[in-house]
Length: 398
Image (cartoon, rainbow, N blue to C red; front, side):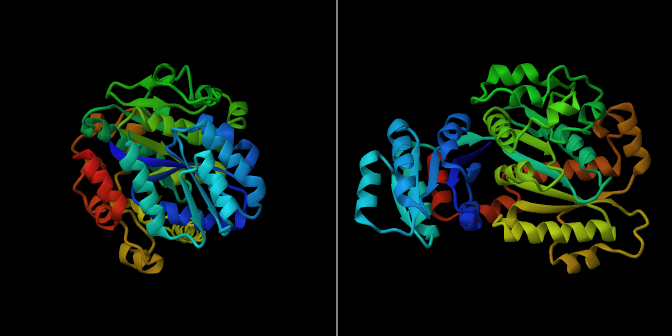
């Protein structure tokens, strides 16, 4: 588990959304649980998503937006409401503070001031919560092996988890096969959780989970195609946020496309694993994905490349060549062992059970250990760059 401050963003200015997202996701320990672009939906989001901070962008119409922020601040004293504007009108600032708004931030965004404001919330009220780490697995080309990796990574993390169970979530709402890969039958699915508009409690979540023999919990994809069309980005983010309060690790197979639901997952995830193969089609898609993410204000430090089926005939493409092309290191390598992997898939079993000494299982186990270890290089890098907020979390946990 890790300490986190969860933020809901209310922003009606689409042109400024990248800036806000970039500044927040650049802070270690900050998690965006929802982005709302319609003022009329802000109160609903506050009731649906667990969060410690609501950040309201007042521009371009601060006179119309400020009363909404003030109303929410007055009605939810436990929620720290921040407002952001280019306005320095004393009347706006006075109105905000009288209503219970915690911080009036001015543009351009000063990351140190934002960090200090969030740190103040943590220090004064202890509003940093323990949440599980969310790991998303994204295939960069059809058949890359994302579902296989997600399934076996979740099983391995189950063996490494220290205090709470691990959940595997199937976000391929139409064609996901995680239940088949684990040879289990799901009576209830993610569609049942998405049908509940309010914040989900542990008893409701536990009832819809499929329990695997390894101890892993599975949240399966909907049983009917029609149910997939009814799941929104807000539903998806709400469910994942609730799962993080219960599970030590939330491993997500998906998103399988860059739609609003997929981007909501990327906002929440601590680690995003892009599964690729040494194929031109896969490399090109990786390049496109990273370009889009960078333009969208996402923190690329939260993304890792995984090269699957390494060692098969790659048609003259090599790891070093791909790294030079993408200007990014491949963080993890999974060796090719199609006979073992396909056999495990066809009998609905984890590699840990049917091929415990295989090279592919050993590589996935190593990946799981790097995610689970608090002393891995990723954690050290985050600690080094976390600044004031990281120091506050460190002090709060000691």
